[in-house]
Length: 159
Image (tube, rainbow, N blue to C red; front, side):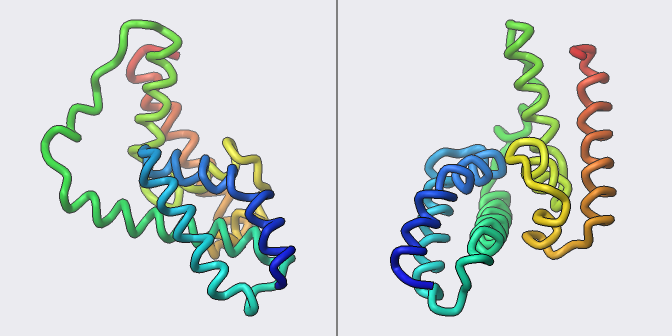
C-alpha cells in the first residue's frame, strides 16, 4: 500500500473506527487513543497490508486494542462502576441509557458483533473476517446478543 492509499484509508475509515471504539470503550479519550494507535501501527505495517484488506485490518485492530484496554481498565475499576442500574428521568433518555447499559453488559464477541452489525451496518461476512468467525457463528452471536438486550430492557419495563 502506498501513501495515497493509506491517506484514503484514514479519510474513509477514521470516523467509523472512532464510533466503534467509542461504543466499546464508552470513553471519548480512550476511543481516540485506540484509533490513533491503530493508524500508527497500520502505517508501520502498511507495506504488508493490501488496500483491499485495509478496512478489515483496521477494524480488527481496533477491536483487539479495545478488548485489551478494557481488560486492563477492568482491573482498576472501583465499586463506583457498579452503579449501572440508575435510570434517568426522561423516558427517551431512559430507553437509550438502558440500551447502552445492556449493550455494555454483553460479553465479547457478542458486543462487538452487535455494534458492527446494527450501528456500523457491516454484513455477516465482513464481521466474520474482522473477528475471525464464520458467518454462521456471527449470526448466532448476533441473535443471542439481541435477545439478551431485549430481555434486559423488558425487565426494566421501558419497552
